[in-house]
Length: 112
View 1 (cartoon, one colour):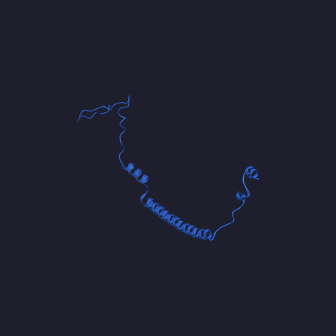
View 2 (cartoon, one colour; view 1 turned 90 degrees about the vertical axis):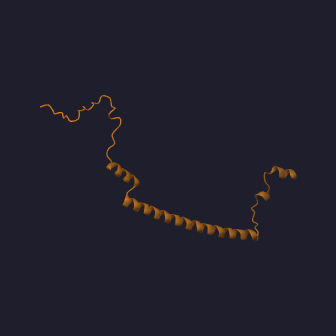
View 3 (spheres, helix red, strand yellow; view 1 turned 120 degrees about the vertical axis):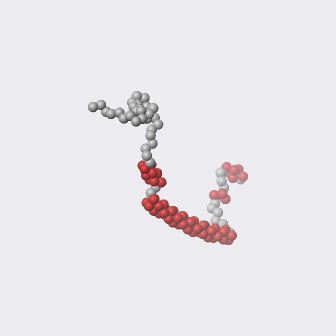
């Protein structure tokens, strides 16, 4: 008799569906559903507010960019207005012809 139970991996009680609930379980599930619905509503409102704020911020940024230009465009325009910076390696290049130095007050005239 007991040997038969030991051979089976599970008995009928373990395989049987549990269909019993108490009134408290129903009350809890009802309360839980209401709480979840409230959280879902709050989260939907939060998402909507964040989306509106994003669109406002993006539109503001875009208008500002169109009227004032982007930071990169401003830096490029400013760099174009500056005089060119001499290359420090240019005079040190080997084989470059050095300019002829003239004494002050004397002008060299080209050969005729």
